[in-house]
Length: 255
Image (cartoon, rainbow, N blue to C red; front, side, top):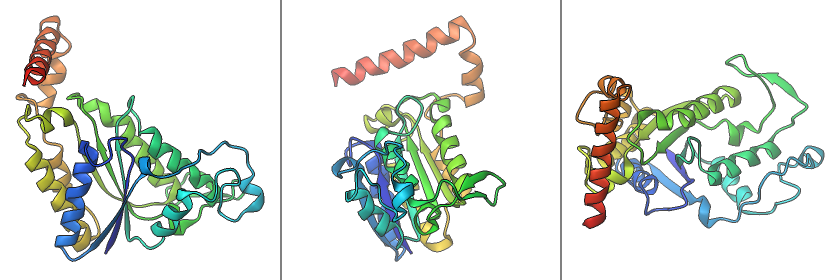
């Protein structure tokens, strides 16, 4: 099992995205697999300009930006059994780095060759050796609000259905800064342990188990999420949530 990770975080290895990926890679290697990583912020990546030139040359290269590092990553993806797309949430969606990379997929297919995906969605042909690789989506954010990651999660579910790319894992973690600063009931060691377990499961089973996905998502709040949602609807509850959050931020800034 060879796993290729694509890190869309601007913080590279220092942020929670990079730390979670490092733990997942350790799990892959401990189970006998191999792992390879790319940090997009270190690469030279041109943006798709929707010029359509790639649909004329049909050689799988962007007529404006190629050759650049996107071509190199695409070539390595063809040799991967699983690709991990990892991103922090920026304004409720994937990072600009990851979106810029994925938008380059446009050069890998023919937009005028219409087809219907296995899930029944009208799309167009793609280079399945790159675009349809089984993948894991790794999503994290700093906010304690569970809804923060929802749009990004749905993005990857839609990506999977249109491109016929099996999503074999969805690893989601919120409250990242609080966890790293030791201000949450979930510790960074626990997050790393679940990511390592996910890596081992990829090698052993070809997918991440739902149990591991649920454990990684464990709430940092002292109350159940359903109660948290109810409390926010009352004036007193909103005040309590904000007061608690701001007091922790102040304590962190002093330490």
